Length: 297
View: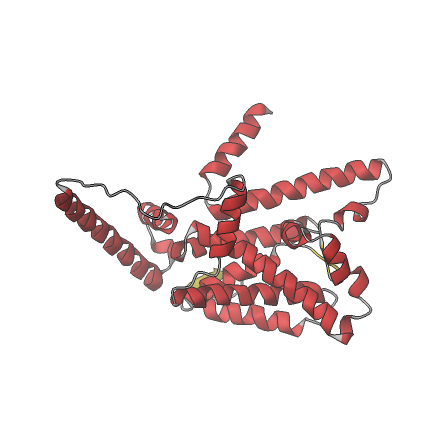
């Protein structure tokens, strides 16, 4: 048992950020499922405590449990719900990391969840159609976060082709369009809250990718908050007048560094051109590794 846990820890550390988020989602699903089983043995219903982690549509209830805007995006209603979300997160997480960094992935996962949850609450409190569902509706699932990753990737490289079962190769821009239109058509279905949240996540993905083109990273504040929390709520103080260090012989070192960096950038550009023309399957193992390493820089 100890070696199994050690292997899991090592796999988690070595995995990409998308794989780490998959591990987190699966781990939370297993823990909540086990707690639910124990609760049933003591005649404690699952809904009595899970609703405190899910996102309520009714605003007064949300005020009582504000943490649910974060916790809901790591919960799932069942094994199939988890499976489909994690398959999408794995597939598009790998694509996303070809064009963006691991910090971008982390920030956008949360931004997509925030935007999806907020749009869900706004819609349920604004439109009369949802009045009869308002007080007992709760949202859970990573779908909004996943849609943000998908849409951001499609905005970044709309002509990239992905292979879909039964459909063959499809350009990302068409796949994204179909997903958004489908959610729009089902905003009054039995799973209206889920489809509305998807649209919020899609908006977050577009906002992020479009903003990054103009030099604005809308996930910066989220990553800053996560770093602050993980750092023990410490504020890093930056010296106004840093000491100046003098390095002799630095010109030669700068030249070597710049030449090496230029060579690496040209190699990544070549691999991206090959990726665009022939698809991900045409890349060698070394080329895939170079792209993955470049995405982490």
